[in-house]
Image (cartoon, rainbow, N blue to C red; front, side, top):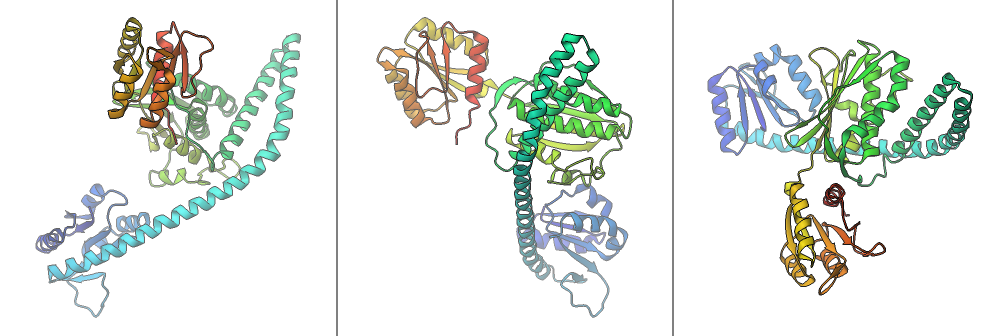
Length: 467
């Protein structure tokens, strides 16, 4: 909606709403502020028209709205007959058409202010990214050199501890090794904060990715007396860049451990599938986060932690990584106390992808199609370069599987043509020759193929992002 009217004056509200709707505006009318507070959605209301009595009664709600949306224009309906000429005052009785015309113009002003506000925020964000980039360059130089020395020293210490049977020293060495990995990962991700590329997505189990993050956060949890439990669930697959997503999960777990150390000292993690999404959930038993400030915590350098306990970059980096995966991340209060962090990623649906098979051996062609269809893919099977070029002239697909040697040419004749006509399709060379190559192929698979590897490779090809 564009205009919110809050008034118990039915006649005035109906008159104003009718005039605004005739002017093409979307209007919502609430009898009181409590109802209005329940129905509004952030960043949508450009204008609020409220009765004078409601403004006084619900001043805190209105102040909160204007704080969140400083571009919103507030107008007050009043019966008072004073000398004020403010355009923000609408005196009853009023000419509905004139007031509607005024409010339409006010909307344009509000829309301009909203756009300027957004641009200012974006420029501030870019400035912060520049600061992060300069900070990262210094960190990479000043931290990575001594870190390399520490990393190199861990291996002989661990070997000596194992040789001497000193389990305590071995455990200390492993903790140092994990800490080195955490520091290295942090520096890498801060360094990549302002110059990232597309993630390399592969359809794989999330469990292994999550377990890497769990292994890295356990020393932190142990130091703070916090237990972490990964609830068992069915194996969940999703297209993701394992190292980068592991960093995002690690950031959420680290925050949860810090929060739980000030509360119930317990963190629970769960993986699940909901419709066409996969969900990573991290629950903590800490003091919780105010929902009003939760979205701001994803901004660079924003943090609720005491000085010295947080950089304010973890959630910002996490949001960047998750967005690069086509997903979203959010924080919300838990009914039982504490905070829930959710990462939602799009799942992979093979049935949405068509695979073109080009193979001149009929039995091999049928076997390939059968394996791919069992994996959920839609297939088109052709036997020659001529047929493939004709099909690609009128159609496109997610992936192409072509034999190296075809009756009327080679895979390069097919995959090279596909690179021009269907550039986003992944291209797989299928061959019986160990040394066969194709300069247009993204992947290579030898005959006889393993069905599981075939499906995994084709999934990866469907996820290729070309710039």
